[in-house]
Length: 185
Ligand code: FES
Ligand code: FES
View (tube, helix red, strand yellow):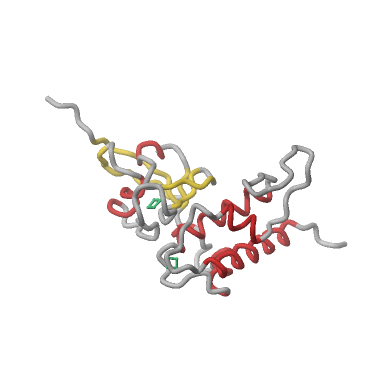
């Protein structure tokens, strides 16, 4: 008898636990969309080129079309459905809304998931390919438009809403920085 290519898989997504039978060859993207009806994560190219399928895996960006669902077992998956706090939008979502960081909206869930990670990566002092001074003792780079464009470059927008997307990420990053400031006594 041929070995089974399916098994029960337990995934932790947006704070919930899901157990589902899946073929081992199922991508995380297809598990989310086709098995769990979490269709906020979009399928664009299905080959790692567009960023539409971006989710967070243990807080880091991941292309769910390139990730097997079985490889996500035991990790915390965050999709766009888990970003808001109930009815209250996350500041990154609010910034995209306020600054029109989208047109058709198809790339937006991936853009927002990427932006969440970009803001954390920058706050942690990670350099990017356009950071001029990458010496360990150098000051963290300012999150300029150039830095945002580079750090978000894995997320394509066929509508070309890039100018507004950059502004939205900048505003959300400012908001996150304000939140971490010590209140003046
Ligand atoms: S659908 Fe995954 S990168 Fe395009
Ligand atoms: S808003 Fe349409 S693809 Fe980005």
